[in-house]
Length: 466
Image (tube, rainbow, N blue to C red; front, side):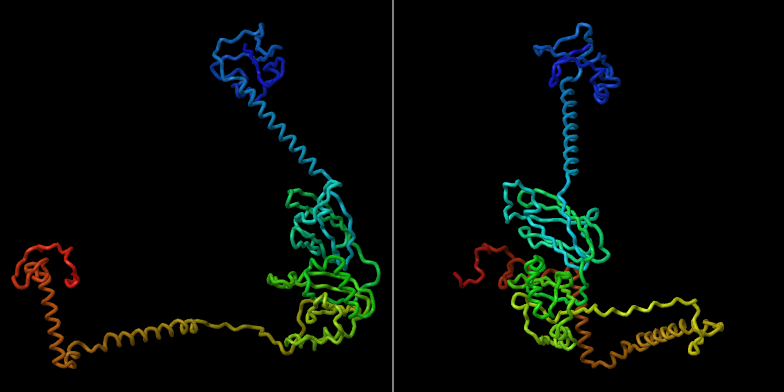
């Protein structure tokens, strides 16, 4: 038998039958007896109080050679167990975080009324009570319908920059009645903290009378984020009251001009995206608003002229309204219901002007096919024959050209051709000596063919230079 000291394990004897794991036994080979060819007894560790290893007197030590250090294998098993423990703790921690209940806020939007909810840093980030959230903390948000990747179709989210608040706004429709849960995740861009909150929307019907008179204005001097807070919206309704007959005005919808197909303005000071504001009231439209929305006023706008505005613009200078984009909707008079077509039996009634043929006579298309194929083929053959006659049968010939040419020109031409042939024959013959002028060194007066006595590299090209 083998006994030794195991590091990292407190005192005590651990036998192989009780503590050796199956994977470790497989590493030892087979049934835990060690590598093949070696005889291993059961492993036994004993740590005496003095810390020195001791052997059990009842277990004889095997005479086979010692294998790889058992201490190293013990360390590996301990590392595996520690990693498994870390993973278990991590799973438990993540499960605890997932089970943590996010703060919940209940809101009650109304059908046909604008809904605005502000997402600010103080409400989104959970800090200790004694710590104030800096107003310049950059925070971004991500909102979606619970169980869905995006917001419902009637709700929109906007935020100009991470250092400004975000807004959830929109107008629910009658189809959106009921309970909707919006999950909002806030990201702190400085500390990378993440918090979640739930908005429970209980959408119901509004109380009070209906608002049959509705008007929509395009405000060019504001962005949508500048109108969503309650203060600018109230100021707009107060200013619009001077153009409308006395009555309660309510906001019905707020939409960015970019969502209506508008263009992003240039980054110039004073340029805004624009926002559409829809207002409803129980009071009829004033004469001033009716004149602005009249066809004559639209015609003047189409020609580039100012619209017809018979009253004082009480919205200026805080709100610059495009009076050419004012639309009025009157729902006080119910629209006539569309006539529902009555389904018939599927048989057309007798019509004296429609007399379809009862029988179709047989028709032979062989003649049409022959005309369609043979006529273009004959025309192509005729054109080919005409072109061949012009190119091959209308040639003048060399004899006729020679008779039409003057004798002097013919002699000159023949002389040139004869001299050319003679030069070609001389160039092709190797027995003709090279001209003297082509030799490397030739004296015209003496006729000597000697190499130059003076280095040509030292002789200037123009002798007058020296």
